[in-house]
Image (tube, rainbow, N blue to C red):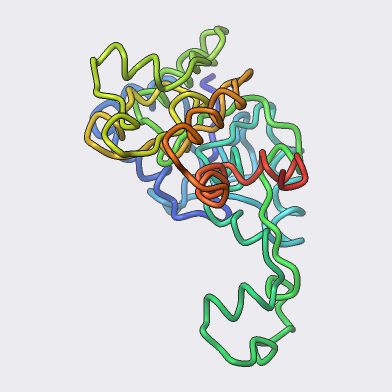
Length: 256
């Protein structure tokens, strides 16, 4: 029998799930290997019987935590899908501020306390990655994920192989593509510490790497800081570059 797969989401834009749908014809090949029994983005059916749970989104509320633990209890394998599930997402930036500060900034209210405190989300929302709540077996990083990488990871798991997630910096891919380093043309890039595997898509098209795939396992952060300082960036700019997608790392270090 084919393994049963269920796909779930929490706090996210659901863009990573859309990437699965964007497999188009290739999704037929995936469907030959597994039975997709729940996928709110693409089907009405749902099921409590599944072997593999693929989960997108960060965990923000107590009810999210409870739901995730139930999913984990039923799944033999749990995969964190994308930056929100892997790192806590862009929304994790809100962890740096108080609930009232967030409400005032988001809703532009003079009295943020006027927003109902009956909803626990408004009291103390704190976004966390999945593995800060439950055991995660595998992670597919990125914002959004690379749909081809998703298919490769799923095939690897089903054939008993280690998922092919790279653990080298984005700079490696930039050099292979002979890209001009953004630092030399006045840009900023997290490439020296960011996990590759994206084919350096942002720098290749003139964008700055924001480390949406997280850091490599052993990043040379001091070297990165030296590079940033060399090009005249302020401490605030350096911190911003370290927290767009990677607040999780600075939280671990007490914001240093």
